[in-house]
Length: 228
Ligand SMILES: Nc1ncnc2c1ncn2[C@@H]1O[C@H](COP(=O)(O)OP(=O)(O)OP(=O)(O)O)[C@@H](O)[C@H]1O
Ligand SMILES: [Mg+2]
Image 1 (tube, protein in one colour):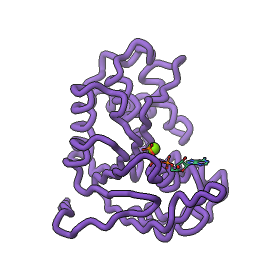
Image 2 (spheres, protein in one colour):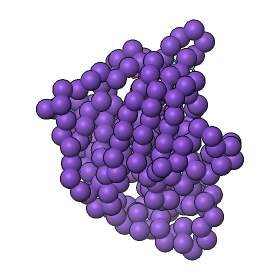
Image 3 (cartoon, protein in one colour):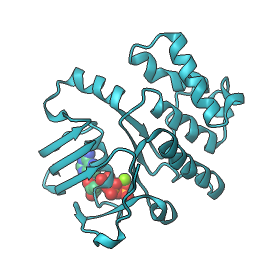
Image 4 (cartoon, helix red, strand yellow):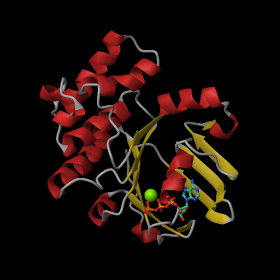
């Protein structure tokens, strides 16, 4: 599903990633934890093809993304990867349902189909009544759930989330975390989640510890593999 090998990344003389190998299976919910500056966001951006490594390969859904042209890469990202960030990054001028529909439009779906998919996602998230609200008329938790729906609309291979609950209170945080597991259980959705939230990390299938640009090896008995 996702296979990365020998990933290295420098920013000037700073070695941020020093050789990362990682394999993630379909339907896994994986958390990446580690101190600030360890390279977590950089790694997630490289997995998400938003940044290029200096060395190593990233394979997603069997496609080696290293050789794709810029145009192919943005199509690939649109169709295979969903992103959720700490701050929802919804477009303020558009309603909740329109925000969810945008990636589907970009992928070439008809308006009718995009709206239907967005409506189904809103229903799934219990946000049917919020379809025509603009982001400033939504709570923080609702905005993050809309951002998850937007990430899901093109049925991505993986959702990459960077501190998705970092700006939420504990109730909304728990609801968002539960949503990730509901999506995994119902649709086999794969997640890679960078988080400082120990409670979230503790309930994911696997926690990857990162320090100084390297993954710390996890004792085998703490790896909790899942069966689908
Ligand atoms: N575009 C960039 N140019 C130069 N240095 C960068 C750039 N992006 C990140 N860095 C540096 O790379 C290191 C790793 O950054 P990264 O954002 O990946 O850390 P992180 O593990 O996500 O930290 P945090 O938990 O604080 O979000 C940091 O020292 C950071 O200053
Ligand atoms: Mg970060």
